[in-house]
View 1 (tube, rainbow, N blue to C red):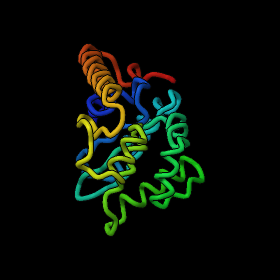
View 2: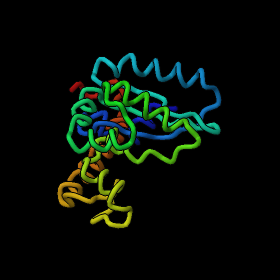
View 3: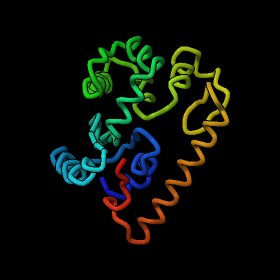
View 4: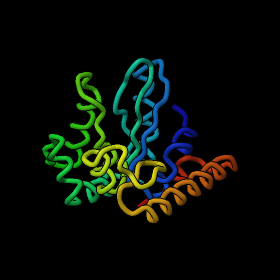
Length: 184
């Protein structure tokens, strides 16, 4: 896993405008991935960010970068809480919800947990629409399927794209990941 991958896939989260981001990367040694995550967390955690491996499967690891305080706020939304309860989450606290998500991702008998959108900062009405309204009833498709406010989603998609372009530009001009990660 390279720091550049975090720039490419997680810039909006690094910038503090998105709750969480996911990406997959290849790995050869599980121990080395854990060491790399610990190294990066040393400078991200003080800025309100946390990097976690969620799933290891066939030489690939699913990496989650998130802002714990923003996630806590997101998951207390009434619609988000209802959806998580519907999916069997206990809602004890944010960390426990992440542990439960990891359990779902690592249980081969489970289908993909579509509630993961709530952990990424997707609008709860869009996650609800996808889970309960059907995958074909959406109004617009961008970074996720939009069932609610299309114009707001389009603005968000544009902001994420601009942020990623700016972060790639900063990286290419010598800014470090530590410099680009914003304290919120």
